[in-house]
Amino acid sequence: MDKDSQDVHQVLNELKNKFQEMRKLISSMPGIAVSPEQQQQQLQSLREQVRTKNELLQKYKSLCMFEIPKE
Image 1 (tube, rainbow, N blue to C red):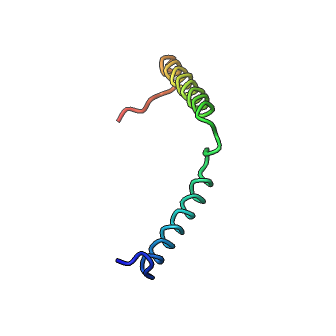
Image 2 (cartoon, one colour; image 1 turned 30 degrees about the vertical axis):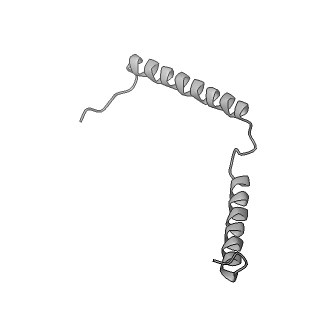
Image 3 (cartoon, rainbow, N blue to C red; image 1 turned 60 degrees about the vertical axis):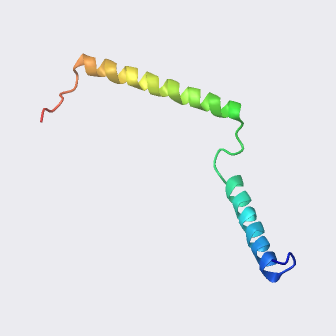
């Protein structure tokens, strides 16, 4: 296959366009501008919220304030 053939140039242009599309897609992804350290802090905060909410849920369940329908 000749390096200067039209097919090679066409394939290279298609590949170049795909790379440009992917760069745009990646830059528009949510959270891409957030550093790994910030992501870890957010993750830790969310895990703490889940833990707290689970504890509260268990506390309220143990108080039997709600009538749980039996099927």
